[in-house]
Length: 167
Figure 1: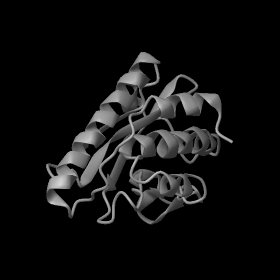
Figure 2: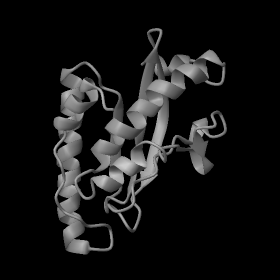
Figure 3: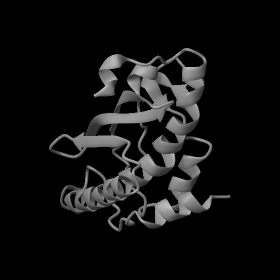
Figure 4: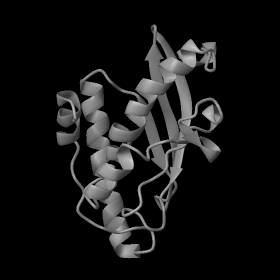
């Protein structure tokens, strides 16, 4: 069901051990350390493979995340704001990744620009609590969503290239 490239990508992202959300103060600090470690490793792997496609940072508490993600189509870089909040019941509840500027442009999106991950990603997440984290959500959630949805949105004229994104 999962292709070899996805298996290889997933195998290269460290699994997390601490089952803690923002309410569990000390355990949350440990979980955040694991999250950052996995994210750093995933970004390093992407850069080495020539597949750098997002940047993330968080607030001091690690509960609100924001950054940029991008998709290259026909040698043009389409860049989008990405954001999400860590649910109180995290990691039992998966994060909901938002691309606010794309809200209403595709049926595979919910209120506030939340991308649709219900059918494919959320069941996988549920089977892998607490091992999956933010890096896994990016790799198995946002990455595939961008690869499928953005070319379609471009082809239908719902997303257009902006010169300022070329930087």
